[in-house]
Structure formats: C-alpha cells, structure tokens
Image (cartoon, rainbow, N blue to C red):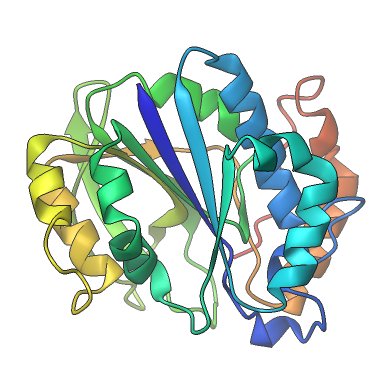
Amino acid sequence: MNILIILFSAGIGKRLRLEIPKPLCPIMKTNPLDYNLSQLIRFMNSIPCYNTMIYINLHKQPNIVYDHLFKKYQKFIEEQKIIFIYESQPLGHIGTINLLKYNIISSNKLVLINSDTLIPNLETILEKLIQKEHNFMLLYQILQTHNSKTLTHFEVMPYLNYYKIIKYHKVTPNSTRINLYTGTMIVNISYNISKYLSKDLSSLSFLDFVSYLIENDLLAFFVPRFYEITSTRDLLEINVSFIKDHLFFDILFPTLKPLNLL
C-alpha cells in the first residue's frame, strides 16, 4: 500500500504575531510541526511494509523550517520519505493537492493534516483507519460558546460502526453542539477519486473537494482531544493545558482531558 501524506505548513500565522514561522511556534519543548511529525514517524514505523511519503509545503521563512527539520529528520529527508514543497505564494489546500495530484493518483491512500492542529494519539487513529476502504474526516465535538471564530458544523448520521457526513454549514447562533473539522482527513484513492483529481482543480476550493467526498461516502471519526492554533490566546492555553494534563505522557494518563480551546 502506498500512502501519501500532506502536512500543510505554509500558513503565515498573522494573528500569532511571531517572527518565526507558525509551524515552529513554541509549545513546551516542542512545536506543532515536530509534534505532528513525531506521530507520523511512529505511524510509519508501525507499518514498515508500506511505502509512506510525507510532503510538507513551506512558505514563510522556508530555510528556517527546513534547517530545523533536517537536523532532526535527516535520515527520512535523505531517503525522500519527507519531501518539501516551496510555495512562493500560498496555494491553499486545494492548490497543493492540485500540484501533487498525479503523485496522489498513483497512491492508495491520501492523508491530509494541518500542521497547526494537534491530535494526541494521532498515529493510533491513523493505524486503525488506514486499513478501511472508506474516506474519513476526523471531527471533534464541542459545545457552542461565545466565540469569535467562524466555525463550520458537519452534520452526521449513524452509518456502520461510524458516522456518515451528510452536509456542512456555518454555525448558527442557536447551535448547541458543533462537529468541528480537525484538519485531518484520510482519503481512499478509488477510481472515482482518481478521476476527480485528474481534472484541473485550480478553480475549485477545498470545500468543493470536501463536498465531492461527502457525495462519495465521507465518514466521520470523532477524536477525544483536539487543539487548534489560530491566535496567541490558543498558544498560551495549549501550553497551560500541556502542563496541566501531561499530554506528553498520554500513554500513562489516557483519561486526562484538555481544556476546551474553542
């Protein structure tokens, strides 16, 4: 099985007001990019018979990100298990997918991950879902609270042992619970998906791609913990939560719950 992973890392992070690239913003003794890559490396090592490649797109200060990662993942970079894509102008998710579409079509599975989102035990979830012949979107359910962010709610219905996503829409004021996209998706590269990707996607949006997947049975998998970095406040709360909940020792403390960051 050939698995192609895109770790989206070209975000500018204006609201964070950091001089360093957003994927390297400090979280305890790590950063979002290292946090996700460490889980992906464990995932790759858990399925040694598979051919897994990680593509990382870069934009802001790409040399800093590359130098940082080369020191830690030199072996994977030299073996082209980790490949970098420089975007002089951010292409957006669908633009990066369009750029890599022929690589994707020649793969069996496509995994999409936002580097500014953190899902503890992601490698275990990937190990479980990568074997299934379905498309999966990872969701996190939150209670509606006063929130300045624009949130998209994904409606689901029971289906097999999971849930099927039937539609999405912007959150309304009377919403109570929100099924929030975590920035992680697993796509089974079927004939129909290959045919869709072979088209010119440059005029489409990422939600167009999501809509197509919904029409082709996109299932939902709910994660118990999820962190998203969009502002300085998020960054501060994540650091506090990491200290409070000992997420680095998640195997030893599996029942601990993080703060609700949204």
